[in-house]
Image (cartoon, rainbow, N blue to C red; front, top):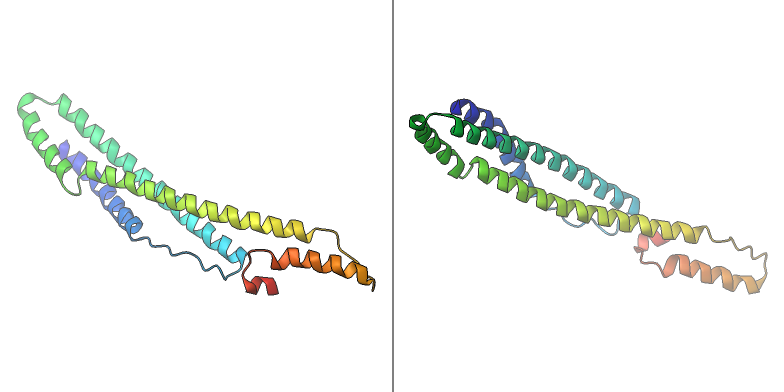
Length: 177
């Protein structure tokens, strides 16, 4: 029975090791501030989707390993004393291994914490970009000033233009478009 339990853990162990390795190798550099907000927002959305996918898969494999560990512990309690020592020794070898079930469960949970941090950062950036876009839209919705050649109205037009463009924290390329 313990051989069956051990064999059932092998696919989950291999997959979670691969995912943990991918999380450890993640090195997402900041997205270039000079690109358009829509593109930056799209980049952060892509990151968020990748993170959510990896999170779901790691959670699945952590749950699988927890179930396998629980099955093994239940099995150890149900067998006869003579055989129990032998099985406990085998269980200890598998658990204490560097790639043991408990170690992988802990590493998986640590990877989930890292992914949660990355996801939170991506969501914050998306929210920041969208709120900035909302401010720009609100300013664009301000009443249109028709100067009709009246020089007194030009001052109001230029002050609105300055508020909408020059006083915003925008890359120069966006100010031109």
